[in-house]
Image (cartoon, rainbow over all chains, first blue to last red; front, side, top):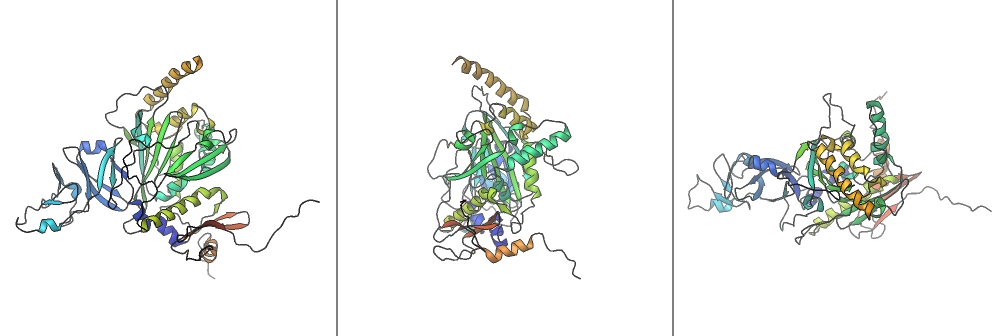
Length: 418
Length: 74
């Protein structure tokens, strides 16, 4: 339970708000690279502001506020030229740094051009996504987390959800929901719709734990039949502050991304790299992406797959839940810890420091801790994950299943021989 | 007769606002607006998980109405 003021502070992400200032210290995926290959300029929205994202012919990405500094027409309808983006209205031209290069209708001898700047951000590509930073200088390094740069077969599902990103992040430190939402409820829906829900999700949680670390919070659990020696506790998996959760198991490596588009809209993305031991990975010139359906034709939530169940709970909590009348228990201490962490990091930013997870030195690859033997379920987890999760909507579902089955067949004879 | 319904759990929200700690128990700094106090319930206890932005003290504060002890079996 929080005061209304605290709930407001934690959920407002626009410019000038404490949370908005904190969130502006991080890079976000704002487009797929294929979008800018199809057409070199697009509109994107992030943290309550609109931007024009563009790619010049030399392959360099740029991001500028959507409104042209001249008369506020949309630069998302601009002309991409070798040196930058030109407004289609009167031809004002801006480079990647926001410097105004041209004002065709103004006389050359004035210095008007030098007095106008677009408040440019930074943009670059990684893992088939275009990433943007719209915060203050100096621009931090783009964190090269393992799933984006490792070998494997990539698959990205996404959905735009009408709710705050915060309640989705709170879900990331709520282990108990798994056995109920993805266990008991899944089994109930399966019984009525004629399928068998995966047993591994319904295991009772004997114990949960949370550890702060350099990238966020490691979430741990002991499920029935397991012990503290098992991966779910000994390794766990992390909430990657402030808007990601790293999960995986059985050769599946995934980042769950929750981009705050504005106070009440979140771009939810499941960036998955399939990399089973023994897997053979071909080239992927374009990273495939697909929209995850979460409502049916009647407007009802689709809850017969794992992430559809999560989405039902996030969206049904309301655009911004009323945390003044919630009732947290001891089982919600992860949620409590996360709220405290946000306040701590807001304070660091207000004092002029770098918040948690800021990268200042280039790093080729950042490996995150993540359990391999998920839910103590063995190799069967990968097939359950694909059949019963959002991957069931992937256009490459059958190829992915085949990848895991073939990889297991290659590894098992070797294991038997050793 | 006033038949207007009160918002669900309004009384709990009022109690939270009334009882959440306002000052840090270690340094005495104002917690409202700078620190945070998240309330959770455990049995009959109301627990305020608290963080002070001034001295960075973190801890749980539990209001009590009576002291309850346990006598070992004998």
